[in-house]
Image (cartoon, rainbow, N blue to C red; front, top):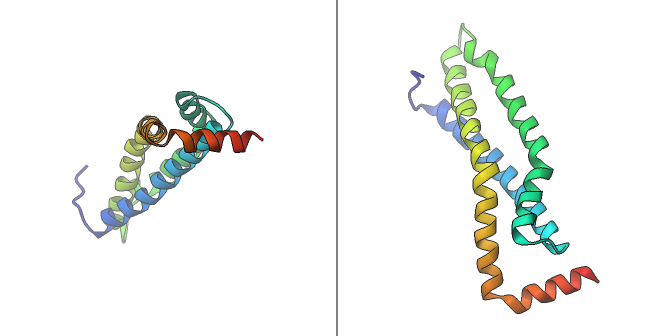
Length: 131
């Protein structure tokens, strides 16, 4: 979009890493809670995404809509604002896909690996949590 990689874009990318990581951690925590309730790994991951879909979309849409005035703005400092906002909006659009599809897939893979290599501990945790 005609914006070079400058300090403003770098600040936007750092901000995006925090938002995407926070959301991915929340999805993972919800999946862990559902797994402890006795759901299968797949159902826990999908259920966590369903539970968090509305808050995630609200956060993303709020951020994107809030950045629109910075993208179309003119005047002093408009170039910096435009750089920051374009990086943030573009990154959130890519980030939402990663949050909703990549995070659950990685949770499923790593949870299966975890349970394969520590089966006794997982069974004990499920038994303790159900009591």
